[in-house]
Image (cartoon, rainbow, N blue to C red; front, side, top):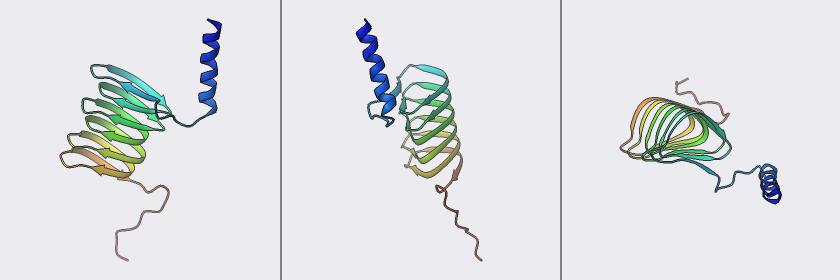
Length: 138
């Protein structure tokens, strides 16, 4: 028993020591699962069930085809195949795939949208610290 506890602690220490996000560390919310609350993680996250609340991740958030999300999100990347209602602030890219339904507000550097997306909301684009060019003639 002692060895098992020690092994777990050593593994946890190794993960904290190596602060890179590992590709196999993906938080998943499966179909027919319903969660309400707040989540903060350094890892990617995939929702195939229902989540209501707030999510903050330094990685990628994926809303799968059967996924439904309602709330606020702060992330690096957001990929939506399912339904999203709320606001998102993504530091890199927001992608809406065919069949996605979005209602809310997007703040991001890059936005990609396939044909067949239902988008009801607003989008504010920013350019990673660079000044925004003026569209007005001088």
